[in-house]
Every structure is written in C-alpha cells, then in structure tokens.
Image 1: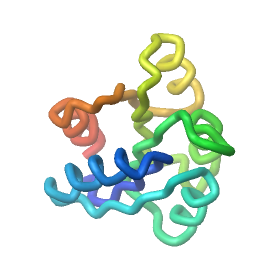
Image 2: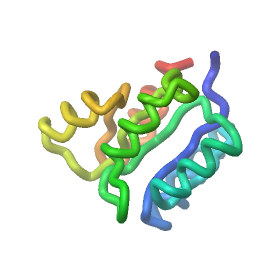
Image 3: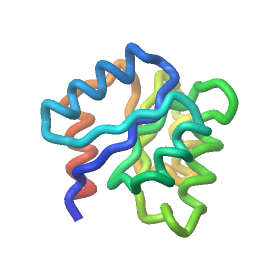
Image 4: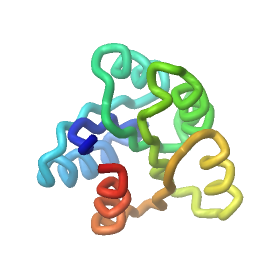
Length: 121
C-alpha cells in the first residue's frame, strides 16, 4: 500500500514546519502532533500510512510512544521511522526494539528520508 498520509510527531515547531514542508512538496498528506497525547488523538481521528517519530519530547518520549503504537493491534501495521538527533548506535537499536522499522538522524537528509519512506510503498 503506497504511503500517502504521514503523521509527524515532534515537539519542535521548527522541525515540524521544516519536515512538513519537505513532505507536502513531495505530495504527502501530513498531520502533526507535538507530544504523545496529541499523537494518540491524531491516530484516533485518521490512521496514517506511516509515522515519523521524534525521541526527545516532554511527557511520553518517542521510544515509549512507538512501543505503545506498535503494540496496539489497530496500528501495528503502521511503520514508524524514528527521526531524532540521538545518533548513538544504542539509541538506534533501542528504537528498533520498541517497534520502529527504521531510524533517521537529524538534521535530516531529505534524499535519505524519502528513500526510507519509499521503502514502505
């Protein structure tokens, strides 16, 4: 199933704006959430085809949120790509163990990001 709708979860308005603009220019429908609570609301409203997930956020962090989403039978089939400044191998491994399907380090290289998204088409 081609990826058309992306949920972008990040507590940085700058990052949300930058990534949203990149994705919209490529033809994706983007919805945003600034924290875990908002992300759950967005999921309940409309199931995305893919989620781009920041890690460092207030309240529920991206690892915890990824784990709760990927273990929910309603959303287990939605791929999550961690999109974070945490660039240690241990962070990447931990993210994947929480259910993420891929991992991108900020600042995001647009070509790398689109290649990773396309892999789920």
